[in-house]
Each structure stands twice: as C-alpha cells, then as structure tokens.
Length: 405
Image (tube, rainbow, N blue to C red):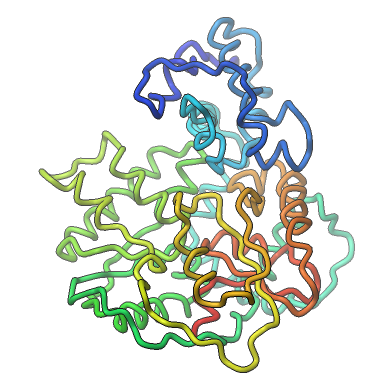
C-alpha cells in the first residue's frame, strides 16, 4: 500500500501564513534548522523540518515515489515541538503535516501510544508505584537506546518524590477580585504528581480568586492530536468543553505549558460545536498560573539549593510567564534559563525512535551542565518526567510548583 499525498501538498495542508497569505509553500530557506531540536542534536539534515516538507511536496507530485513504510518512518521522526512553525517566515507547520501522515497510516507505535494515553488514570499511578520501587536500582541488560530502557527512565521518574519546598509566597497581589476560577491539572498532576493541584488551588485562593468545584476535565488532547488520533482528540475536547459549561464557564488556570497549548487549540477546531460567543470566550478564559502572580513577593527559605536551572518547555507561550516569574522570585539564584533546548520527550517518538529522544535529552543536559546538588525546574508535566528520567546523578528535577511552600 502506498501513501497517497495528492491531498497533502504543503501548499494546501499546512495552513495560512502568519501574515495571512494562503497557499504558502516551503522555500527551503533553512530558518527552521536553527530551532529544530532533532537537527541541532544530531546534525542530520534528513531529520529537519524542511526535509520533511520537501519530501511531502515531492509526494504531492508523485504519490508512488515513497512507500507507506518509508512515510511512516518519516512521520515518526518528529518531536512535534512546534518550534519550526514559530520560526518559519510563512508559518508552515510540520507538526500538522506529521499528524496528518500518522492519521492516514497509524503504526504499532501510534496504537500503543493511544492505549497508554487513554489508560493514564490507571497506568500512571501504577507506574509511579513501580517506579518508586525501582528507584535506585540498576537493572543490567537495558540499553539507553532501547525502548525498555527509555520506559524504565519514565517509571523511575514517576516514582521520584517531589522537590522539598524552599520558596514562600508573601504579600499576595490579590488580582483575582473574586473571579471564579478552576484548575486544569493535566494528566501528570491528576494521576502521578498529585501535590501540584492542591498547591495551585492554595495560590489561587491567596491571589483572591473564588475557587469553583473541580470540573471533570479530561486530557488536554495534545498528545493524541500529535499522534494523528483525531477522533480520540475530539472526544477529549468535547468532554472538556462540556465540563467548562457545566462549571459555569469559569477561568481555567493551567500550570502545564503543553496543556495550555492543547486547550487553546480547541478554539481553532471547526468540528467543535461552540455556542454563540464561546469560541471567543474559551481562549480568553485560559490563563497560566504564574502569569497571575503580579507583584506577589516570594521569599527564599533556609535550605534552598545554591543554584537552580529553568527549562523552558517547547510549548511555552511567547512571553514564557513561568521563566519570567522565577527570575523575579529568586534573582541570582537562577543559574541558566534555556530558550532553544528541548527535553526530547516527543510523545509517540518515545516508542518509534527512543534513541533520538535520548539524544535530544542529552543535548539539553549538555547546555545546562548542572553541578551536583543543583535543581532544575520546568513548567510542563511531560518535561518533568523526561528530564527527571534522564538527569545526571545528584541533580533534582521537578515542577516549579514543588519549590513553593
């Protein structure tokens, strides 16, 4: 069976440019090379965004020129980080193109990823329990390049304890003014790192928000969307939209950059049936927690680490409120703040090409070059698991919420 790419011409499927131009095409300018984590970590042109777009354009002209097996391999070798779309002069999205290919030709990795994500409520707590038991053990025979070895990293990461708090919020900037708000926890906080959500609720109370009853939110849908699982993603999006309505359409507060990206994408989904005014109200209701801190003062307690690194998630918004807040809160204690480095998680790439995931993670750690005893914090549940599972010995990793008392 061959991949029919006549309907996958980048000029038709990759969307409108940032400037509003339609039918934009890749001109092979290479701007994406500087921001693509796979290319930067490996130096392999065939893994770059423009190489994928070139091949897709070729397939649009000659559908018989690439087999289904080769196309599936092409689709799997992408982190779907979105950095190329942000950098592209025409706003072309390789992530969307890869998602279309995965949807047209799902392989074993995609099907397994679907099963893992849909059973996260059962598998994550079980994995956390198992990971706690495995933590500290050295199991021979598992190569760092093998999928079992990668998943062992994630198991132990899920089982690790949260960071000990050493930062206290003082003199809250009560910017909430009694507005109703609910927390969107995301999969990791809901099923594994259960201390994040209560802490977020406590901070919102201090900021003057009225907390509503927690809606029955589902996954944000981003991990399944990037794997090409459109039907499953729509089901999650519909559930989240209905949960928001049932709660009275409150503000939705996020503390995971990937969750925020997944939720905001719902406003662009044509098959979601928004009621009048909701399509505009939905993105306006989604707020990052750190962006609400305003002039709230934070005080460093005794026992704080000598230095802290901050990893910016690939899906962090343009202004990156997490990094800005952390820099204001701890000042010179912040050692390095990344901008271009990717943790290498990559969703389904964990299954299809674990060696690439590991290579990107190693490049990220090379940038930080952390000393023993330092900490690294980030603002994405997936990044926490990936970095905690690949961190150098003696370096602790966690969400920035964990360091707040």
